[in-house]
Amino acid sequence: MYIGEKRWKVLRCKLSDRRGDCHLENKQIRISDKLEGKELVEILVHEIVHARVWDLDEEAVEDIGIAVSNALANWYLIKGE
View (cartoon, helix red, strand yellow):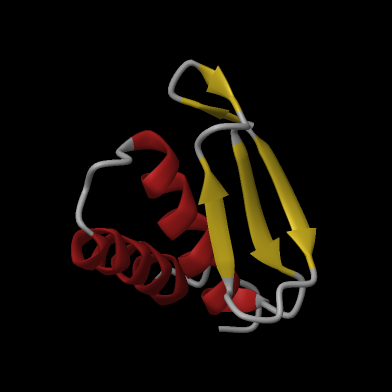
């Protein structure tokens, strides 16, 4: 996946202590394999925002993830919502 002009690897994997994370050094986003639906979209957006705007404060990143996942759910673009 390209975020900005840089290629990032996005992985679904077992994460015991978090729902997702973003590693700027190796351009890698990991998303918990337990997530689905709206929560999956929220965390994926959250980590993409971290990757693109790394110095944005955590509260703003959380707000963006929630707003985008809610908007997609309201438009029935997330399966099962």
